[in-house]
Image 1 (cartoon, rainbow, N blue to C red):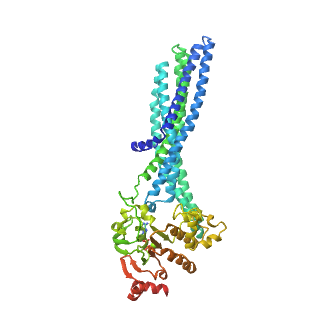
Image 2: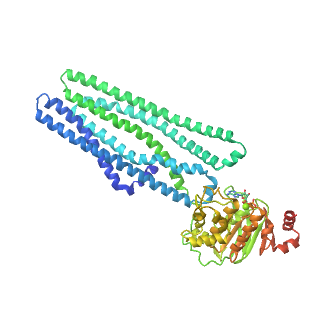
Length: 573
Ligand SMILES: Nc1ncnc2c1ncn2[C@@H]1O[C@H](COP(=O)(O)OP(=O)(O)OP(=O)(O)O)[C@@H](O)[C@H]1O
Ligand SMILES: [Mg+2]
């Protein structure tokens, strides 16, 4: 907890000026509030009985001026205090996003999108309120309590002691309820993230839901999550309600106590009426900080739980980091070497064992073999989406671990079956291959990818906005956009992972043509189920669960009459 708080405090440092402005204004406000009962007492006990109109008016005048100042301070506290809170949340969100961009793919393999979203948005939501009100409220509460204790003590010792003796009981109660509240809010955050991720999942998969007519089931599942959220939240309102109710009782009770004790003192002539009124006013001033204390605690719990979840993500180290002294990969020729590579994903089962493969500059190599053999895995190891468990991968004789991730990936172009188009125009989507490319370069790339024709047929051409998932384009069209990206990127090494397998024959031929153009002068690693597309490769590697089984040109492998030959005959009839 201490560390967490320390971490949270760190975030205030860049906003020191706002912090000081907010705090000094809050302090002055609290002071003005404390002065009020003192003035009232003076008026009742001294000026009124003496019919001293002049002083009476002077005191009232001062009170009016103080109230005007108080109003100005209140504005500053609300506006600039919130500004500080909003700024802090802004910083934290940016930091979190930057961190998420750095995290390795293995993190995303294991986290649900909705959960991540609720971390970035939901968990940090309340933090801006906490960042503002938290320290300020705590400060005001302390100042008001200490200030009023001193002032009240000066007016009447007995009465002050009575008021402050029953305070610890109340604080004990608050602390106890507070613990329950924290537990409830923590659980709430978890289930809220669950409902988020269910929502995200069912929207992303809406086509599947509809295709199977599963709307009812999906709604039912959502209802279950939603109900869970509602129930959990209500658990938090139990202690909150008890706190509110007991606080009311406490403040009402204390006022009655003062009236009874103070009143009898007045009757006995031990205390003036002015002091009694001042006490009542002081106690009323208490109510405000006590109310603040409760809303502060509520916010503090929620905010700290959110902060905890924020820190959890921030504490995750990317699995894959640039080595110290990692070099920039420049003037790549495109020699690739897998040396005794073994690899397993987190769950431990070995996907590759002692895998060896050498690809010379400019060579076209195809990987074929049954599903699950590890072909795509090999391709994700080269750009270091995952790190090899043992062995090494070299590009032009340099271990990929010694190269900065950025320059490594700049030199590798990947075309996959599953194309992701971002929400934006076609131009923006192609430009991802080389941020800042000119319109001419983009048109040229589209032309090379055989995409120019269909883009020009669209009513807004390159400015056509494609949906969140590029839903308004056909599979082949999306594929051509992804190829245009690579033309623009112009990498020396190319990975084509079943780039054409989801397309019909006609489109496939069309795309095959642009892929061939793309692979000219580049080292190319192709994975294909349709063996017709890789027949002309320089080398074909047949891979299954036990590793490389066959290796050679198409003609040699056919002559060998091994697994490749069987596969080839099977497919081409
Ligand atoms: N992100 C991942 N996390 C954990 N295991 C994975 C992951 N991706 C793939 N695997 C597992 O690794 C093995 C190899 O998968 P890979 O995708 O490399 O096969 P593939 O040869 O490309 O198959 P296909 O021809 O069907 O595309 C499979 O058993 C798969 O379940
Ligand atoms: Mg695959």
